[in-house]
Image 1 (cartoon, rainbow, N blue to C red):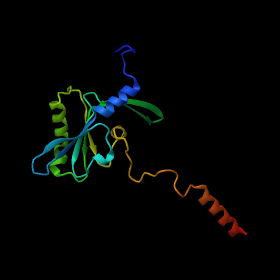
Image 2: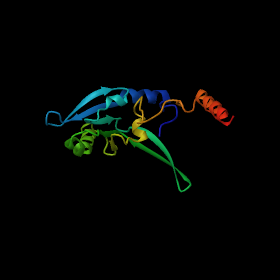
Image 3: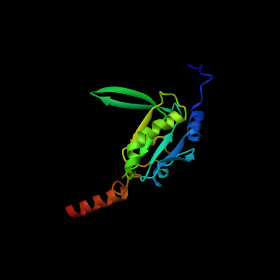
Image 4: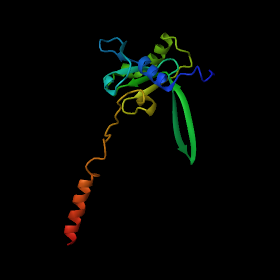
Length: 168
């Protein structure tokens, strides 16, 4: 363990994640499976395409993720690292889907990541929070913004006035 003086500051760690993270597209459009780098730096949900599978390279050690969950009235903390995520699009070809994990493991091996590097399969539409956290603008399906019209004070006031008029 490093002395505290040598440890990275939070801001430096966050900046490193943004600059070190890479996105690779796995596609068999022309009949052969190819892995090509799409971009470096901050990732956006729109960078992913449901027609293909993608590899998110989060480095050999990845980011330390913390999850908290409660089971039978006991609180548990889970800490884990993930270096490589393999995201499989809903419309990816049968070959892309079946070879996704193999591609991710081969990718980690070619990059000479330690054998302890985690390779995690992620399915389009079932992304875990740890995966979503790597993207700047992740929006869940049917996610609302703000309180909406139903909870606005103007709408509530209109309902109250309508109720009073009905009673009178």
